[in-house]
Length: 331
Image (cartoon, rainbow, N blue to C red):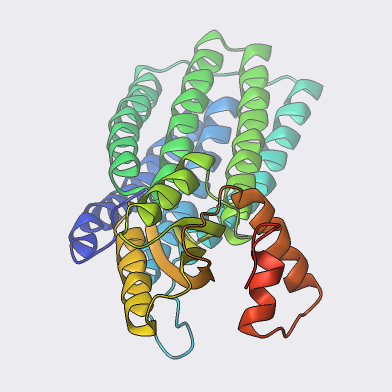
């Protein structure tokens, strides 16, 4: 995931440039593969050309999503527009599924009749260019995904990596000819569907607010506990908002602490957590506990807070302490 803060717009300039390059390359390869399919009669090259046709829409959607993704929060979207990229990824997955089934249909139909494939040096050159250019783009997407944590860049890397395999299969099927050409098209169709399902499931998780990994949650706990005055993390809940994480924390402090000092600690925890890579917002609640007491069981606090939320409790601050404090603590 990428670091949030003032440097973020500069970091995401590279993904925007890559999305434009992806669209241009997809249009170029669509034209080349379409021409090669016409002069050779190859079903496998035609299926790969259709894959490039999908890429034109995919990378156009990703480019638009990256632009929207970077837009500042507004009155209608106070938490920003970071779900735009996962939404584009889901759209790409749906289009991939439709295209994959169409390719499968054409491949299966090709087995019912005979068709000849004309092996030409020009077509071989086209497929070589397709594989070579995709290898370069896959490398650039992978680097951008690792540097920024962008779901769009990760989806683009996976899609481009799959394109390399699809074009390679089409290359082999075309070169061998006969039923191998149809078999290659069949393999391309299966791979397109598989990659679409995989990308779709990943982005559905982002859209549905999946919790980050335990490593990220443990980092949030450690940072919160490192703030002077914090005696424990009684409750932590975190989820993705697009490609960034929002976290809600209940931290414990001495109940005799002045309100102003407790508020300062709360702000310190928020700022420290939001400096973590990939964190967008932290919402911090102060839990007062008796002097010298610490909270050693965060998972019990989590369950207590969940139970309180499920019952719609409107308890006072003292009542909430009883609900979410360890057994045996007294006022």
